Length: 191
Image 1 (cartoon, helix red, strand yellow):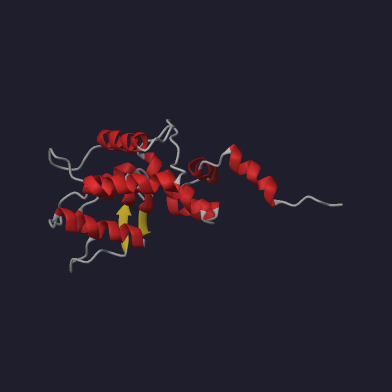
Image 2 (image 1 turned 90 degrees about the horizontal axis):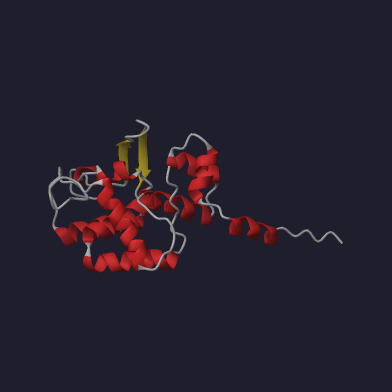
């Protein structure tokens, strides 16, 4: 399996968001929403308008999905940024059809995994990110940001639906630099 990495630069994340928001509403939503709901790309691309909008036309507070890979039912809270991105997207595109895919292809239906992969790689290259990035980088970036902002591995593991903590640790992408920084946190001056 190809182990892509999370995007660890908040500056680069902001740069990608700004570039996409200016020119590509669908791609902006894919990037912003993808990093904030932590879904696998197959689940993300299968979302329809009706999954994020209620009967009254308001953005839902949570997604309720059955994961394709695990067949588990998940409830995913939508945070402020994901709701703002959805609102902006619907205002920018005028999409209102409940059965329309959230990430439509120009050929009809939803964009495919390979197209999404090309998009993510292109966005990362465009802002000068060197490394191995792909569609799973969106999910891993969510995990990394959750960890960097004080989330504990057990809770992140649960949110991602992982069966083992080791998988979550790889997602978070704990690096040698992160481990080295721990030594600075511990005061071993016993004298």
